[in-house]
Image 1 (tube, helix red, strand yellow):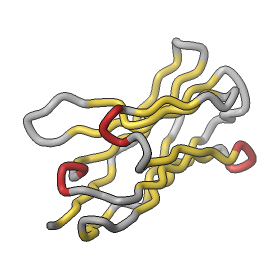
Image 2 (cartoon, rainbow, N blue to C red; image 1 turned 180 degrees about the vertical axis):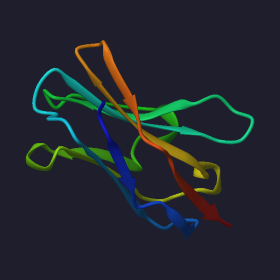
Image 3 (tube, rainbow, N blue to C red; image 1 turned 90 degrees about the vertical axis):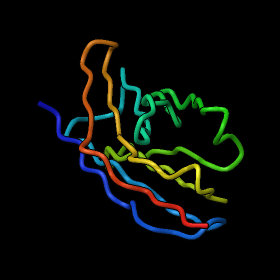
Length: 116
């Protein structure tokens, strides 16, 4: 079983920034995709951003240009830098880790609240 430990959520005013972290208990050096998803009450879980072990990134349309995903392979950690936050970014953010398209794990979620 892989453990994903998330941190960095909280309350911020619109226009502010937060950085989320997700530390994995398994190496993310190869065969791995790390992602951040979010789910607001009454809505489906959606992709925010992902990054492969090769460094390729993918972003949801609503966060392009504002959020940046990165990783530290030595620490098996992925980060989500969130800038220019909007109230509609308010959600529970979940870290996802996948190896070789078969082993799939989720973090416990961290709340991000953006006030007007």
